[in-house]
Amino acid sequence: ASALVAVGHALHREPNARYIQAMTFPGYENALGGRAHGEHGDSATVAAAECRRLVAYLERFVTARRLERFAEAIEHRTRYVTPVLENLNNTFNATAVTRTTDGLGLQDLHIVEDRCRFALSAGVTQGAAKWLTMHRYRGRPRPPAADSELPARARQSEGPQTGRVWGGEERDSFEESAVRRCYAALRAAGYVIAVTSPHAGSYTPESLPVDRPVAVVFGAEKEGISGPAAEEADYAIRIPVYGFVESFNVTVSAGITLYTLGERVRRLPPERWKLTEHEQLGVKLAWLQESVPRRVVTGDWRARALEQGTGSESRA
Image 1: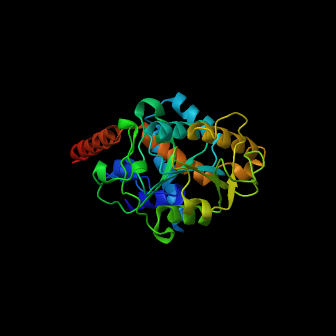
Image 2: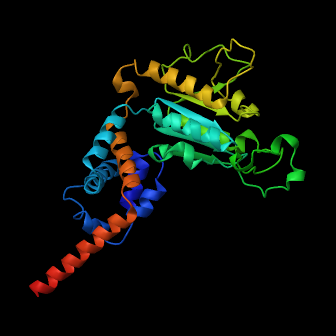
Image 3: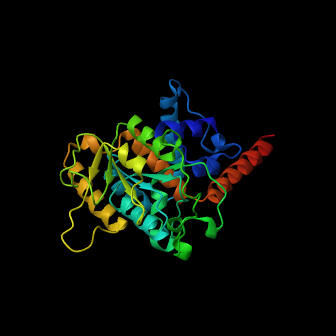
């Protein structure tokens, strides 16, 4: 199990709990043929070697066409542009932006959930979320108040499309908030942060600097970006509106902004925006895990164990 945890930390940025759960079964190293000789060195090197072996093992259970699609998709995958969703309380909007993120080849999605739980609609996402690396930043949950106790703007009337509100007007300070943790993680990874706003911003998606990796923050439909998120950002960007409406729906805003930035970034030298070899390996490993049911892997291990046991008895 320790090798799988190392793979998650070293190659996939955030441990893929479902993958670790699926592959941590007794004797998994036997199913893989045991640790290869000479796999020594720093943890990243060992993790990369282990990851390659796990990829090679899982590829046996996937069709050639699926592997071709993996190769095609990963060639265009990037982390240079990444969306950040702050408290999207409408599952349709959250799902649509998630699907757009995958369609545009953006690997990471950062989710701030200190006001409501992030939720997706299976009928809309069409499985897009399983191909993304989700980074979730949750606030300190408070017991949900009765609807009558919530302030008017915290009450929702959209039925199943509404996320669960975690508290009323009370918020954590910026130093303690999920937004702060999200921003700290992004800046540690080298990102600059831009918030979207219809009221402010001297930059548009066409003019925002892309000399460094950029994270773009989108807020909920009514509330928009929170004050702390806007104040601590490096840039504010807007999409010009030429009609009578004040702004675009968040799904449209995300589509326009992320597509424009993605196209601009892909005109940079490939080594700047493409995933590194190790990142590609980690992402492919996660995709294979999503494609191979746990029962298939455990069934294969049991068959191998039974075969090995039968062979030992025959020799005896």
